[in-house]
Length: 62
Image (cartoon, rainbow, N blue to C red; front, side, top):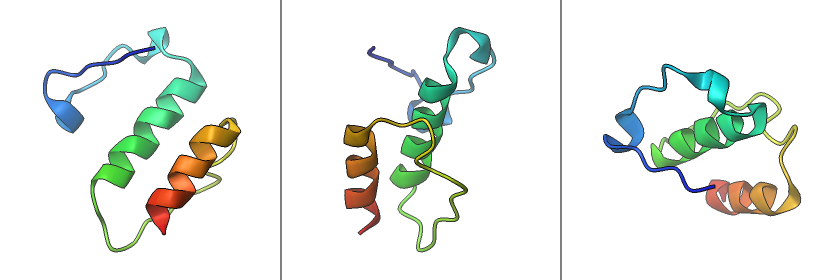
């Protein structure tokens, strides 16, 4: 799936019914990781994610 948002990370997603739980979680993680924060507080970030995505997230958090 290829998602493109007109306003980058600021795009409002008002119709989340068309996305699966996994896709919504991936979008939320991507938004959080692109924020370049000093601290990330994540609650079970790897639940329902495939191995490849987990590796990308772990690499980004290092």
